[in-house]
Image 1 (cartoon, rainbow, N blue to C red):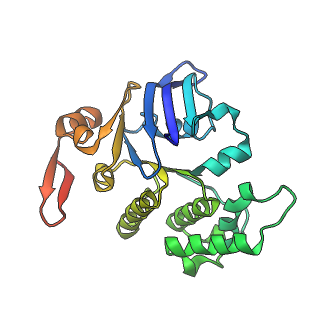
Image 2 (image 1 turned 30 degrees about the horizontal axis):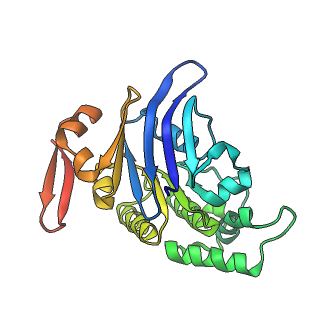
Length: 257
């Protein structure tokens, strides 16, 4: 059974502008989907709909065979972990306290995090490689470091599906590479992962399902070799580019002409 199944999904804003239509795909445990497309294509909006933050106009989102609408907020949080594109800090919690908040769906309403919750949070912090940030105020770390802390918080949440909205956007080149490796590791551990990205190379590196959205509301999904083709990317991004095989890397890379 698929962890996530989307059937005939469409969305439009109150002004009548339709963002996407006829979105359909399924994703199972141990699978990754790279969601690519130009600015304004609706990638973030689609993630928000899948996470239950925005209502679809038409269609269904099915989680483990059950309609998303039937889930309580707490049940949904135990199923889906969401890393937003931007997160504005308000309170100066330590990074450790911020990460342990990911345990909220597993803690009673009037209960405090237990020792086991802090152990899980510490493990998530270690896995992301931000141990040196653990005791620093969340409000005083950089945007890239906050992005890493957000990913750690989602890992502490222990969901079955992880959705990441441009998780590399604030990261330097080295940390972008580490994030892609982390995503591959999560997939190998059985998570289903959806990640939006503006970098076609990320989709090539992940080598899973690729979903392409365009500004006309179109959606197509398939294998990496099926979607990551020069003629398709040129049409969607409206720019000249080449896909070149790099022998030393053992894969193709996308190069603007």
